[in-house]
Length: 465
Image 1 (cartoon, rainbow, N blue to C red):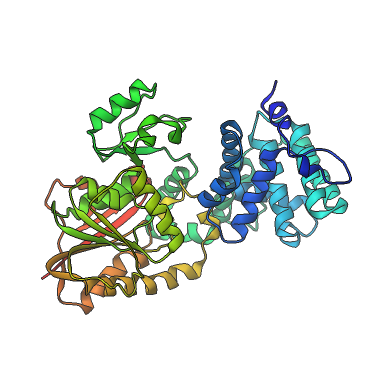
Image 2: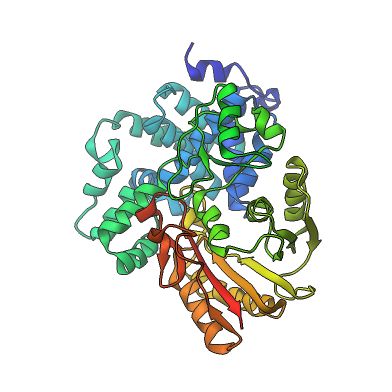
């Protein structure tokens, strides 16, 4: 039995509607609902968890392959769809456009899905959500793509890019081939050159590995515990305390996860706390703490933590993670980082809201959500948070500013502006060897996906003198 035949066996009766018609698989309904949530502003991870909770693990994996894969390939898929729709994708209802993308991705990229199933299911979804006229359009477009799927201009992103007419320049061809917004590629080419930009986009289009860290036991003990569960772990680059899980492991089903013996944290994020090098037994505030990865890393290092966030919803996630880990020595508060009500402490970490351009591998929706204006507007908020946090650092204490952005406007420029306007602080990197030399840049921590193979990160360690 094929994967799709098995999937067709698990359907929702409600999807058939009162007038009868073909049934639609739960998995495809879930994929369409996730894309609807993304258009409404929900982040991908949250939308995926909410929509797929009731699915069995195999269906969840299939939906993840479809949705995450589509988002990593959307530029290419759009280049296939647009010339096959009179007036282009832009003239269609946004939801109908997303249904076409889901169908086209199944046809071109998911070998386990028979063409008839990809087409018929997408047509039925379009009929249920938009009516018979929309379903006829979807049927015609997808059948044409199916007929032409062996053509070089359809079969691969490289072929689609080469097929662009002479009015499209090299950057436009690159945007189709690597499925990133053109304006962002232009920024990165100016910053690092074309070769490094292609390395970065290749990194972003790969699946992100799951990196776990031990809590309450040593790395060796965690590795042995996982091995006893049948999970052979891999080494992690640049960071000695992490373990990489092999693909396909159901993280939440692991006994070590359920017992609170591990948590997930990418190397870039882990290096921020290592670079901060906050002394053991110090009192530190994590002002943008949820979901809690950096808080747990500080607790693991023997730091007493005040963890805060302004969002009650995000704080619920933080509480849940801390409870699972049986974490102590942490004081959780609801607090706005732009106006913290906090007594002077030994150290403050502000992992500020940012564009997240260093984490596109993990969050493929972010590349399509980002706007040019974000890179101008977010530094205003970042400066406000950094200035507000500085007033809560005791004399001699540390202030650590961090982002998961690759953009200079959010990193160097924010810190340089702060230091120029507040003579009480100086840049003080940790001692040599605390973090690998490869990620140090003029006293800053700078982790670049294209150079280091992990999520991007930036941090500045500032001392109040």
